[in-house]
Image 1 (tube, one colour):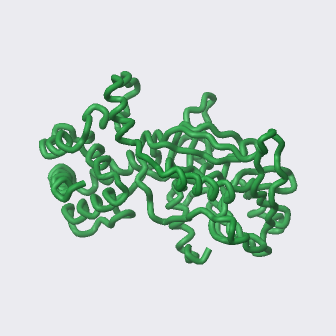
Image 2 (tube, helix red, strand yellow):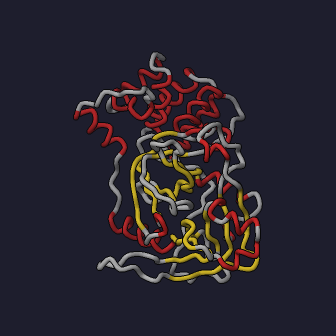
Length: 347
């Protein structure tokens, strides 16, 4: 965007919102908090300037304008900015409309929304990321069989859910029976490879946080520390040619309607992938929800954006009789929790 465009959005933001109100809207709609991303000190002009810089760096300045305008559609400053900078006002409302029954968009508006959210990705780069992803994911097993999915974060560490290895966390000696099986996939003839086994170090438990009871019951909200992750140390470093995935403490800009992919070992089966879209951010951004299909065994899987960046740690499904969603812990919250004890660059 041009400097004049950003200046108009900035003025509209600080004239329309106080920090607390926009922070709540960001939490409910993007799963982000102002104090965590850019800091809340310095007054609304400075704070919203930093917020706009953060969104523009992620290529989502127009998304920020759409979020702000749909929260206060009658504000003249936001309205003027939206009419000038958003390609289709009705399409811009769609990701933030929480009404129970939405009328289908006309084809031209649907195409405008798709175009707004879509982008071209270099095929060679996408293929390289896909290869990296496939090599980093493992099936988590113990003496009782497959327990879940995990993925490599660094040369010697695997991330999965706390509940996947909770028995071993309670009795650390059981870690000797835990196996991380990489490259467990189907061949072209549908036969399965044996995969590559990696066992845990004696001091295998690096860090973990439990899940919330609300993740099981569907009622209430999780506490900030209930992140359902376990960081495991392998007995030996993984060869350098097997690339790990990033455990990034910087939060991505994720909005409703964004593509979400879950690379998983469903039911302990060979590696599979399912895709859908992000639908909501419950608990003020402590969880992501999406309509991606998963099965038991997917717990601990990476949730990926359309660019194959890891945005979440899949861990739960809607406990209702007729499930409506699947759910992840935002990866940046896990990374920030780990960073309180470890240097993330040393993993």
